[in-house]
Length: 300
Image 1 (tube, helix red, strand yellow):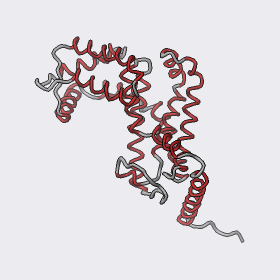
Image 2 (tube, rainbow, N blue to C red; image 1 turned 45 degrees about the vertical axis):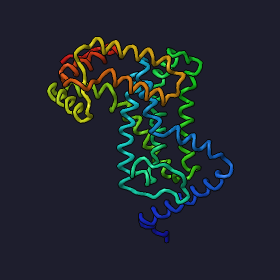
Image 3 (cartoon, helix red, strand yellow; image 1 turned 30 degrees about the vertical axis):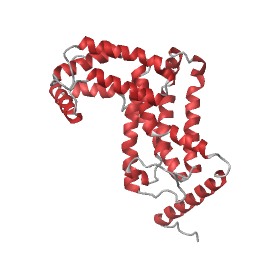
Image 4 (cartoon, rainbow, N blue to C red; image 1 turned 90 degrees about the horizontal axis):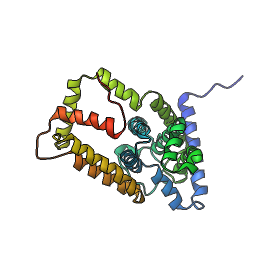
């Protein structure tokens, strides 16, 4: 007589025990061999605190891949929401040997799934799905010699960075596998559905103009800044000068360049002395998008 399958709780317990033992063994083997600086560098390369400034910096200094960069930001927001929700619901503790880890949010105390793995894999997935656009952008930027291999390099980076999470003691193996699978699904979903084109279509077709103006007005009040909308051409010229200056700043570290461009753009767009004309602000934003990013305005 064949033995019956154990209850699901026992199966899950066995799986967790096996995962814990395997992760500890991998960590024990790699810990004295791989330098901590290498693993830490991989951790930083997949950190959201580096990802967002890098993407924003590129977004403000180039027009070749503007839509792709916006899609990356949208996917990153989706990833943060899903990872935070899953960590909060599942609440699996991190390995007991995890040391010297900086926690950005309260949910970072929990281990499942790996946020680094999901992030690097949605990036790699979107690079793969947009490989033609990525290659054209690299060629236009003067990096044509790397265009053919760049997508493969990003994919290899995603795999190595995810594996380093176990070797560094941050996560268990199942955390990384689940995060990688989630990242691939996020990349596909963002590429097909949750992207810039569909979002703009939804905003233009479904949201009334009065609602748009109300949202902009409340946003400016909430942030505590006032927009100057009296001279649109002057603001546009200032933004164009930032765009040109950004190409000369490539020698500066990407993180510093991002902070610089964000600060300069804010100074050009906002003014604290006058009450903003909300309708003028909205017209300026749409006009700026159509000229500065090379997009055609869509009229209702």
